[in-house]
Length: 112
Length: 111
Image (cartoon, rainbow over all chains, first blue to last red; front, side, top):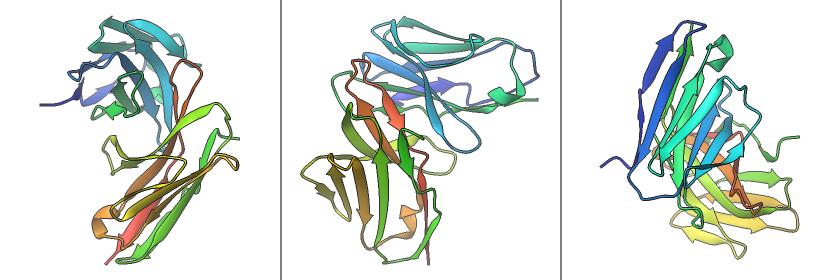
């Protein structure tokens, strides 16, 4: 059983398009995250939701819009994709009071 | 200055060697500390949490010095399978439980 899953695993698209990435966790966690890992391998937090409430919103262009329909799901919609959006996007989850964060396998986004 | 700083490496060591990684953090609101491991083109996975008293898990030993805001990871008897990027991570007490990742230290264990 996959604990944190993401779809799609690979996404290749043209500049200007709109795309979504989906994340689901079956661990019963109450907090989920989106991270971006760029070509220099730096993992940077973008957003976090706790019980469907947005609690972390880093300095991210407003072309990026997260949405959490329920505790087990966190999606990321990106409008008007740019070349600089090319990266690996990781979803993660944790139980807020606990320590361990579990990551999904990542979505490798390439914008042409 | 990055909130969590690590030497990017790469550290190239022979099998059986002992290697140490260091990490410094700048935010005094940091509450919890971890080492994660990330293999090429894979997701990060928790290697171990780091406690003030120091802790050991097999060949891996982690230390925390809160006064100096410094974390270390020691790997003894390196194996080829230890080759990966090691990420130093801190979690803040600000209420958002934000995790901040270092840029990672790349380790290559050579046969």
